Length: 106
Image (tube, rainbow, N blue to C red):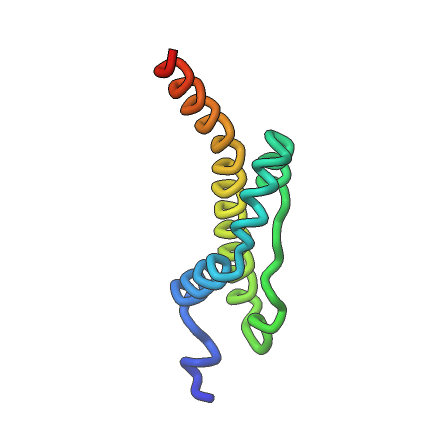
């Protein structure tokens, strides 16, 4: 393994962490947590910090591990919060559409 592969740049660590957070995110789970948990689900999504898989951090420098972990947590939290908010808003949108439909039938 060459020196470049063992010591990737900060930008690469950030990009890789965000890509892996995006692919590893449990979007449907967080949607349903927001849907059924209401505001509590959104609060949980904003507080819970997932940790990156340890296998991604083997043989990496402490700086890389710190940057990767911070980027992974930030992106994961963003995804969790967005999906839980969508789950929270969907019932309200459906209710408004239902009321509009009922009013148009009267």
